[in-house]
Image (cartoon, rainbow, N blue to C red; front, side, top):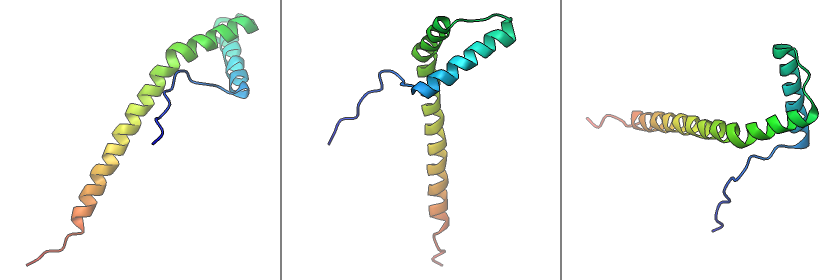
Length: 87
């Protein structure tokens, strides 16, 4: 069986990076009234990917596990609801 590869860093496509850089630029302009350069955009995006993305990713996994657990609980109760009265 093949061992699962660890997730070392979240990888973004070039399209995703471009879109997020545009969002960062727009945020700075809208919220702070400042222009932000491409290098600063890239540095902020790298910071977010390195520091924030793993936290969000792990939270999403925790939420998925909780949801999956609820689905399994419902499945088990639905299964036992199928039992017929043997009297």
